[in-house]
Length: 299
Image 1: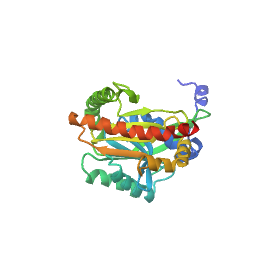
Image 2: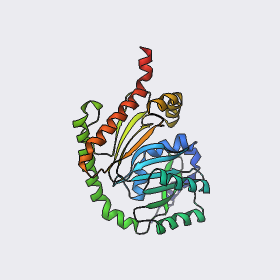
Image 3: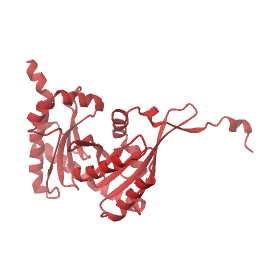
Image 4: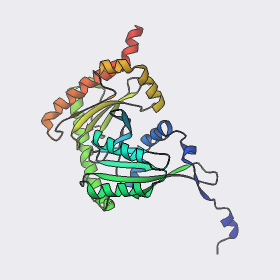
């Protein structure tokens, strides 16, 4: 028999406003999620690696661009409020501009029309596309620390069985390919600071602690390589300030580019790997020039 005194000592699980955990969506929640994608990965059953935040798409920017287990691009769009038509429209815009294959829409709540839209997309798009609606909650027990909870409210049909069947083998194969590519890069450009046997799609280089990191990406399944600034080690606000102060220098050095470049290759043909490495090497020099510019001026 359970002691009544023990029952009275149990805490009560309560929901807390998302804004109490993350006052600002762009400056607080997005950077937190980018550094904690493992929590989301466990829920949707897809290993995710952050590529960049605020991924540029024309005059807009997707919240987080990640890499999936087969190297495919994963778009993550965040809301700390209820789902709305504006974000649904942005998702469709980003889907095309970022060539994403998996879309994860996170919101406090989802309306029935928006859930219907996600389900419609899952039914009427090719099998290579997958759309998730994920409800975000923040809870605490009595005075415990706040705890985030992700709840899937819409997902592709038969997704769980497909992930269990495919993800383990595909992940191991991709890790091997990533290691082979970055080892090839080191052999061709040994002075760039890239580490051989690196088993991730991205390699981050941090020339200076007070500046954004440079991320070089090998998107094997998506058939492209890319390079961009990322706020790894900095807040999004600090990165935005750094970028704004150097906007003209960035535009001039990157020949009109903003802070992201992608180039398509047949990544499955290893005869192209030299050209891919050379393209990344050339762009890396340009990105480093931007970060080192004020040191040259000081001399």
